[in-house]
Each structure stands twice: as structure tokens, then as C-alpha cells.
Image 1 (cartoon, rainbow, N blue to C red):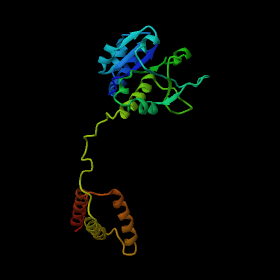
Image 2 (image 1 turned 180 degrees about the vertical axis):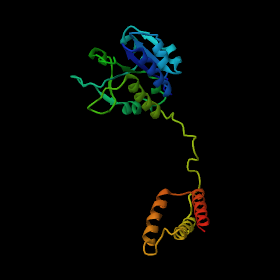
Image 3 (image 1 turned 60 degrees about the horizontal axis):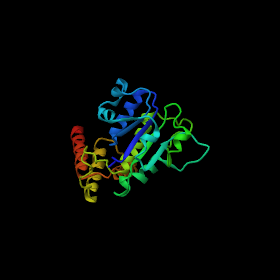
Image 4 (image 1 turned 60 degrees about the vertical axis):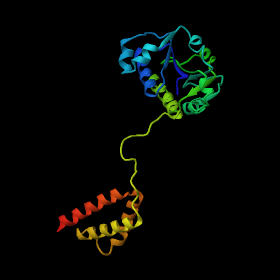
Length: 243
């Protein structure tokens, strides 16, 4: 669903960062990488940092200038952490994803470039002139400089989520058990109170207030029937062990 997006890196200094970007892209289902006059590429450092996303590196296209890299695109966004004298229309990474990764099927045919500048200085003004939007990643105002691969990861993550590609977790039972009924909970509280009395934890003058607090704790937990059975098994074991 993100095949119409391309990541464009301008004059990347460190080849390891290119590999880190490729890995971030593959994590989030973005596959098209364009490189504008990288200092070193291809590189063993890039391959090492790619960690299994070699296919993105091998299909990356190197261009001599930004104009060539974005020539087939209808929409271009330039990422920048710095304020500019002349204002551009701005979008945060999330707004960008909501605007362009959730569009209709017809609009999804538009080619969209997300451009990232040099590690030490970002994009130049004449490069931003080629962009329709300035892309921002909200972060700590006292330290807003993100590592290149981290910045790409954030943007691609937002695209991935907005496009609806995330899959449900297969871990655990997903709370599919039936919640315990009021009757089951009352039997549990009676059992709990009796067990606490049997082990000498409850005192007659304080039992009511303690039980009220314990009810609040277990009610917040919204126990299912299996969980109640487990807890009552623990209570029975405690009672038998105390004899």
C-alpha cells in the first residue's frame, strides 16, 4: 500500500546511515530508496547496517541532483528541523501520513517523495523550493536533531500505521475469556475473606474496610472466569497449608 512513496536522501555523508535508512524502510513496508550524490555508495558499511534489507540497497537508484530524483513525483515533502526565513506549508509526520497514506485509490497513484537532507546541515533553501510541504517531526525543542535513520523510521512508521497495515498481535489470549459474573465474584470475595481470616490476616474491627479496598482492586482488574478459578485455587491451597 506504500508503493507510491519513495525516500530520497540528499548528499548523505556516512554510508552506514544509508544502510540504517534501508532497514528502517523495510521495517515499515517502504521499498523505494533514491540517493542524490551520496559521498560513498555502495559501501560495506551500508550493507552491514542494512541488516537484512539488502534488497532495498541493491535496488536504490543514484541521481546526480534532486530534480532528477523527484522528476516522476506529483507531491514532494522536504524534512527539516530548522526554521526558515520564508515559510512553507508545514505538516508533521503524522499529518503527512493522515493526508497521503489514507487517501482514495485514485489518489494513491500519485508518486510521493519524502526528501531528507545532509546529516550536518539538512536541506538547502533551493532544494526546499522544489518541495510542496515542509515535513516536521515534533520532538524536544532543546534538542531537535534526529539521526537520519531515526528520522526516516519515524516518518515511515506513521505512514505504516495510517495505511492500516499493522497486524494484530498473536501473543496471548486477547482477553477472549468471559468476564466473571457478579455471582462468581461474590463467591470469590466470600472465599477471600474466609481465607484471610483463616491465616490470621483479617481482624474483626478492620475486616470491612480491608475487604472494601480489596473489592476495588479486583473490580478494576475485570477478572475473567479462568482468572477467578486460579485465584480461588490459590486460596484453597493457602487454607489447606495453614491447617
